[in-house]
Each structure stands twice: as C-alpha cells, then as structure tokens.
View 1 (cartoon, rainbow, N blue to C red):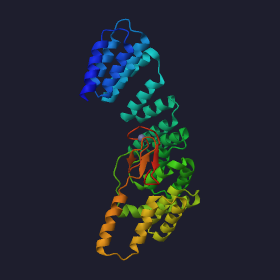
View 2 (view 1 turned 60 degrees about the vertical axis):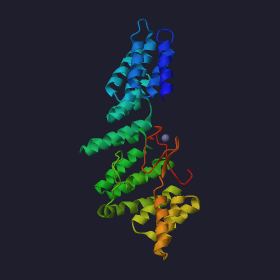
View 3 (view 1 turned 45 degrees about the horizontal axis):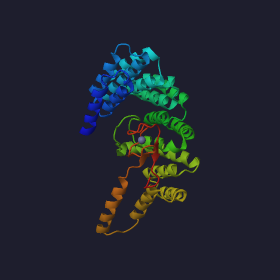
View 4 (view 1 turned 60 degrees about the horizontal axis):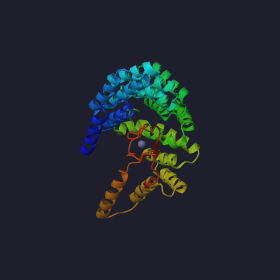
Length: 347
Ligand SMILES: [Zn+2]
C-alpha cells in the first residue's frame, strides 16, 4: 500500500511542528503500527514523550501506545517497561493490565497472566491460564501442585471446558476409570451445553490440551481407550438429548466396534436435526459397507466422501473462521469460547 504510506508520511510532516496536534500525532502512530511499521510508530510516541511541558495524561497515553507498538512488534520487554511507566503516571488502568496479561500469556508466564485476569474480574480467562499453568506443572512432574492449580481454576470458573478437559485427560492417562466416570458426569453437567463437545473432541485428540500436537491414534492406544469411550457413551445416554452429543456418542460407539448401536444413535441425531450433515455422512458410510459396488463406482464415491471428510467441523461464532481442531481463543478475532460445531454445512 504505497499510497497509504505516502499519505501518512505527508501528514506526519504537516503536524510535526504543531504542538496542539497531539491527537493527530497519536493517531498517526497507530496508522504506522497498523501498517506494521513499528519503528516509525515508536519514533512518533518517543518524540511526543520527550516534548517539554507535555500534560501527564498525554504522556501516559503516549507511553501506553508505545507499549502496544512494542507488543505488536514482539519486543515484549520494552512493551512491559512502557506500560509500567504509563501505570506510574495514571495508575493500573484496565487497558494496561489487559495488555500486561496478554504479554504474560504470550511469554508462557501463565500464573502471572491468571493473576492479571483475576484483578480484571475476568474468570473465563483466569481459569484458562490457571489450566495452562496446571498442564505445565503436570508435565514437570509436579502432580500435587498441578492438582491444586486445577482445583483453583474450577473454583474460579466452574464452567471452564479447559479445566475439565485437562482433569479428564489426566485421569484417562492414569487409567483411573471410576474417577473418570464421575468427573465426566460433573463436566457434562457444568460446561455450557454449546461447549460440551469440546471436552469429547479434546479427549479423542489424544494430545496436550493446550498443545498443538497432531492427532496420533495407534491401535494399541485405541484398545486402552475403549473402556473410557464406553463410560462416556453411558453418561451421554443419561443426559438430555442433544444433537452434537448424540453424534459423538455414535462416534464413540463406532470406535468400540458397536456399529449397529452407532447407527441407531445417528438416526436419533437426524431426528433431532435433519440437516446435520456429519450424521448423514456416517450413516452413508455404514450403508455403503452393506452394498456391493463395482470398483469404478466405489472409486468415484470414495472421492466425494474423502472431500466431505475434510470439511472443517468447527467455526468461530464471532468471525466465522473455520478449523478442524478445537480452540479456546479464536486464532483470528481473539474471541473467547466462541467455537461452535458446524451442524449444518452452510454454517
Ligand atoms: Zn473469531
């Protein structure tokens, strides 16, 4: 965008010597930042900060914006220092604490991030970072400490799918089937209905809750998982009928080799929502295995089924981004818990 750049440069020259043009000056810095020109944005803030006789609140704002410039540019230490200087002038404003919380999270200082969100009274975020912290502690072998951190996360926000998922993942790894059953029941009862699928999807993914590990399911692991799948099916059948949970129940039954029951569950799913495409796809797969098809016909069919299987199943209800893996914060618009399951293909 060379035109935009030229316009910004031109405007920058014009307002440089007008002391009253502070607002325009700050806005210019934001424009540079939006263009990814962090150095230039920072220069503008600094020239303002150094101005003699500048009002303290203006200086605080310039420092705040400087912090945001550095944060966007990935210079986290310099960002923190700018925010701290801004806070010295105007106190800990929610804007500053939010920025510091995000930097702490990006630096994987989860405990610190959680404590910032606690002071902002944002329990969703606080519980999320406590769970991140707990996962790190589990991975360091600090079992007891991790357990306490996780309990704190659930105390802060009982609906937290992250915290429940981590708790269940641990129990599954330890092979504690009875505990798992009870906790799964509590999780289904506590997590908001529209987010319950996140727990099952996360348990099926066989990876770190907050990691980015790709799904690996080997046959041996699969066998070890089956009792846990049975327990989940049992609990789902007891809970209120819900399209997505029924679909997952059917998938779990399929993994357990209980194809016929899976078929019945899928039919039930379709009764709850005619347009639920994934249930149709699975039913189609079951029906197909009962047909005698010519190799050519089967070849063509497989082509389309493979395409359908690659459709990304999750979407952000705020910005519409589509993904095939669960997320707690939208990777594009940064909304929290905005993930939805795409029941219908046009969703
Ligand atoms: Zn989004």
